[in-house]
Structure formats: structure tokens, C-alpha cells
Image (cartoon, rainbow, N blue to C red; front, side, top):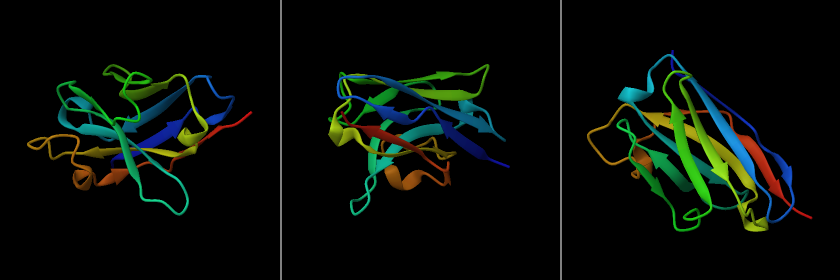
Length: 124
């Protein structure tokens, strides 16, 4: 079955960097869009970045220039490299997958498979 497992979260100082990983199993990345999302308690879930089944990437305005999404097909793993982190980036980060590749990966409602999340805290 489809599984997504995030890792790499933690506590980092403002201006620091983290790399999140999302290990996928039960499917291959060539046939799924993958998205990174984040949620702050009391706020709506926010799409951060996505990578399409053919490797096209998109970023939310809050992530442009600071975050980079990538994937390793051989390892079936997706990464989110985050740099110049700010306190506003504090959230639980989730990766998600959708087999509906006929639509753009930026459409958040497409995603049907979710990981358990990893906490990112940016604080001095």
C-alpha cells in the first residue's frame, strides 16, 4: 500500500537550514505528484511546494528562493531543502501524494495519501 514517511524536522535557529525527507513506498514517483504542506495549529494547511510526476516543480510565494524540492527516483524519496528559515516557517510539515497527474500538482485537493508529518521549529 502507499506509504509516506517524513523525517528531518527539528529545532533550528533563524537563518538556519534543514532538509526534510519523504520516503515513499507502494508506488513509484514517476506516476505520482508529490507535495509538501505545512500546518500551524489554528491555521489552515498551506501548500509549500510540489513536484509533478515528470519532475516539474512549483513553490508557494513564501518558499520561493529559500526552499528547493527534489526527488531521487532510485531511492523513491522526495526532499525539501529549506534555507534561511524564519520563525514563521515553524509548523508541522507533511508530504502527500496523488495519482491524479492529469492536473497540476499545485491543486491541493488532489492529494489522497499523506505522511504523519515532521515538526519544524525555528527559534533562537
